[in-house]
Image (cartoon, rainbow, N blue to C red; front, side, top):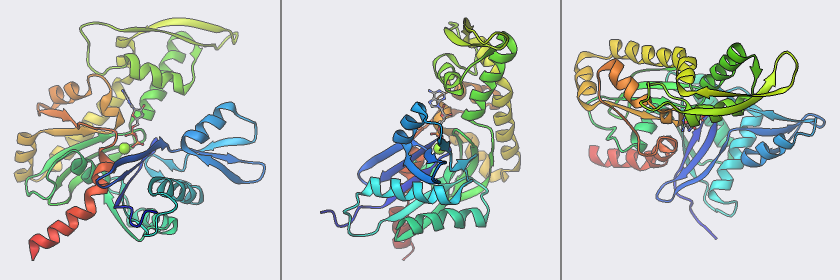
Amino acid sequence: MAFGSGDVGFDLGTTNIIVCINKKGVVVREPAVVAFDRSNNEVETFGEEAKEIIGRAAGNIIAVHPLIHGTISNYTVAEKMVDYFLWKAVGRRTLCKPRVCVGVPTGATETERKTVADICYSAGARNVVVVDKAVLAALGSGIDISQKEGTMIVDIGGGTTDIAVVSMGGTVVGKSIQIAGGDFDESIVTYIKDQYNLLIDIAVAEEIKKKIGTCKMMLQEKSMKIRGYNMEDGMIQEVVITSSEIKGALDKNVKKIINAIKQILIVTPPEMKQSVMEQGIMLSGGSALLSGMELRIETELGITTMTSDDPVNCTAIGASKYFSLLSKQRLNRK
Ligand code: ADP
Ligand code: MG
């Protein structure tokens, strides 16, 4: 029987829930979705299992996304989901309640932070700290967040893009915008509809994005055959689409992200800006994996840009290390 479980880092993403245990690693990575039975108002199951049964869709089972654009949209269901994943991660037989560090979007209000903390306490956490996601992503990417010099983090997830300059363990300037991977997928659906009169599923759009999507012109054009429903006669039809078409479809979103980074650079204090220019920008989040993202940001801003070694997991990894960082800092101050 396990006694203590180790500190738990929780990344409550719009798309994925990731749980990492300090010194152990990532133990849960599942879609942030809940299967809900409308006939009796009960939650059926969570994550991967939920995705599966929703796919087989009996009419009364619906998908509930407890987070929309990074913010809790359904408290009761979110509470159940956090409870399920927390105990799935640490094991029901753990005797000692875990300490939990959880990330929230940069600029989340006090009420939003308290809501997230309450959910973790009610799931059974012994102690909860709520920290800006960008700070955790920086920590999980191996950046020394306690240093005075500022580092810029751009975390491009599924529902939000968090942009922040991090220094001395906190956010100096930053914001969270509601443009991210989910909007990329929607732009692809819209493009295929407008251009080919074809209706495709959002999951197909995501597949297109990952396979041939890009935000920088490629030397070698990629293409992909896709199937959709013709909007006039409802018949299945095939078309071949190319990466430059997808680049065009995504461009408006990518520009919004780059503009938001520029706005944060404008309000960054001059002495911090110097160190951001020197240290460069660190990208994280699943959408940092979109082909060409690093190069596009680097070229448009003229600042060296790199991607975290583990862009999808780094927020949860950083969260799992946060408590030990706090105690180290306390020791240093003594
Ligand atoms: P969140 O923190 O919002 O839950 P994640 O950081 O887990 O989100 O990122 C999820 C997003 O990353 C999704 O929109 C997904 O489509 C996108 N993504 C994952 N892998 C890739 C890839 N190889 N190329 C482009 N986008 C990707
Ligand atoms: Mg994320």
